[in-house]
Image (tube, rainbow, N blue to C red; front, top):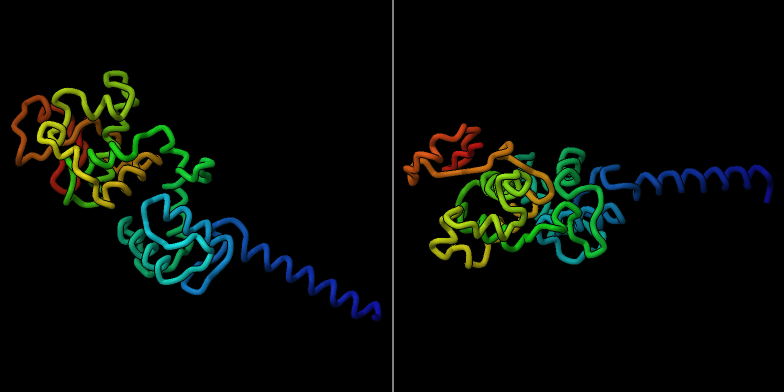
Length: 227
């Protein structure tokens, strides 16, 4: 083989390796859509699964189930619904799931949070509310944990006497809907549409003077969130 052929062959190999590193680098390096495959797709699938979306096997193949999961994620988070995992979609997904996971595959932010109980609370208090309103309800519980005036675990917050109507009427014991599970996971990973609220209430169902006296932050669906 001549030196020229060796040089051309070496150059081709370098280019191939460079292109490979772009195609299969960190999540977010390229647009992912139906037909895409590789480690980036598998990472996308893993993060969608962490958020409660069904993608099928984590096989690194962007098929119809992964596309449907991307579309549902986009719809739930107010993004353009096109089934393509581009920069905006991936950035939001990474923000909500964190840059890494625990060895068990659970989101880092939720490893010390009782997601099932939090999801049952969301299901009981905000079933039928907009998705962001469900996330906000979960965030209220986690905001209370950070506040010195409240207990320090999800269970102690949820079962604090008189704190939540769903505990009083037994709805806390219902199996949570998928949206409630996703909302609880999202809040546990740091999302807080309530903007730091410690309380929420439905103005059409509440006459409690104390809750009405709290500084109001915003309203999502039927719930007003307050400090």
